[in-house]
Length: 449
Image (cartoon, rainbow, N blue to C red; front, side, top):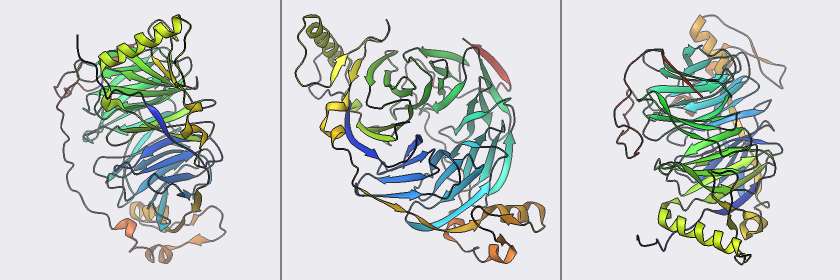
């Protein structure tokens, strides 16, 4: 019998924030894990400094709901996308440089930096994905294989591929160099709300409107895991950096932590009122954040570095015995729950905890002040060589060529030129995957059920 891990601990709530005026749509930690960016239907992005709890910055340059946000790999830039059809790239500080460009003909649902920070991928209700160069704001190429709204598009860890999912019930994988769709999986029951790349780059998880979570092996070109643990559409999901766990969130007001090696949910977390819309791990997986339609931002200690299957099983068995005997554990926030036959996870309810009751609500929200840069105008000049008149929201004036040139020395444009993307390690420690790189079988298609 294996020795129990004395350090074993369940996930627990650490911080509790409110600040947005409407539902939060996405969460992203910066690469260092010291700051959080949240986008919202209130048309703003808020930067939360986890080291300075009394201060956060509100970026309010969008004119309509903000659907997505992304940090550059060096944390020196943030990109946000909106229903107003624009993408804005800005410095994450109180005063800085902000630029924007009209990215799509319809609302932009997601934006993502590549691992080098030199490229952006956007997805939209116009059924397309687009690649952009960050430093020059230059349009590179478009992927137009989807036949309905594209909800999510993300670069692979190595930056050589992009995955997308949307309302046409397909998951598609594109090769950046060839511009071709090299994989296509077609769903029969539900649409993809959000996707996540596994850290090894060979697997993708998709959260779906049919309440399911699916994980695909791109090397084997097949579905390898299916979870039916939520009672509502799955809105977001994120892999732990070690690749062994997946956190998910749903309209059913819960979050789940899945043990991918065991193939089952191990924790069910509550605390939000209404749909839980976004989840994210920090760089080392020591923390994760959740948010929802209730405008709350919850920061959790994952404690997954202490996870031990023997200790977990002993805890589940012990709590089940106490429950059956009619004696409940004293002052605990965790009990076992069984939402279905395959879900015997531990329930974590933080609403009686000190962290939940002492909500961080006395912080100062500072509105950012940015110097604008006329991306759309410059892009038209570069692509077509003729002047264009650009009308900006909330102003009656137009910008001309001289105005554009006056900003040409902005720090936003002086980004380091990285000629090549460094390939990330593909050492695989995941038992049900292979360490082979994805073979080149262009346009292969699979159905999954």
